[in-house]
Length: 199
Image 1: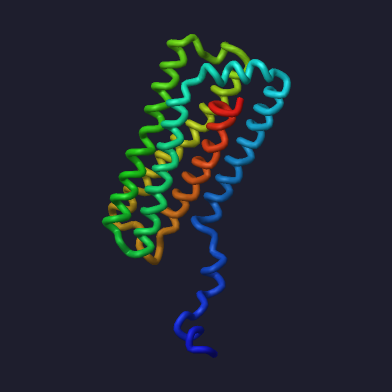
Image 2 (image 1 turned 45 degrees about the horizontal axis):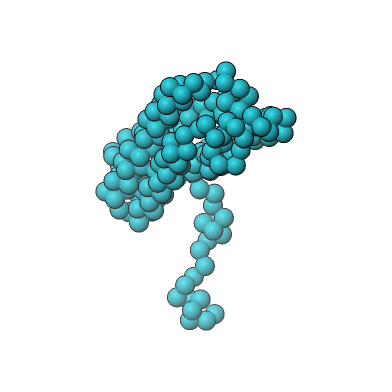
């Protein structure tokens, strides 16, 4: 055995192959992805049948709101990832600060969504404004529901973190939350271009 191998022993096989979070959260994430795959299929079928409605509808959406939601989702995901990284290094205070930041930024999403809907209604855009907007509202409201569950999850995990429920040796709950929030983030990163950019 070489000196390099002795100085840098390979991590145990179970550590290198460990899935972040737990099995339960991945069942939930899988269900979430299956649900949105079906919804995206509806989107593409409707778009194939009504291309003009989708093109015109996208021009009427508020791209500033869509971009703001995108930035909020990505930034909150980054903060939660930093919280996981901090607890891995046994930096409890930093983990709390990052998770609080992630929560505050995540709360900006429903606020931005409410403002966007208010703007839509002021411009005569509702669920009966055509097939594009029916699909748009159904998909984005579904995403908002999943994000709301994620926000409730952040609150629960933050409460546990504040009372030292997670340590450098056991942070599965925090990691599970991060996995779910990243999955919800990825879905929005598909929704945003489909409705606000490419349609």
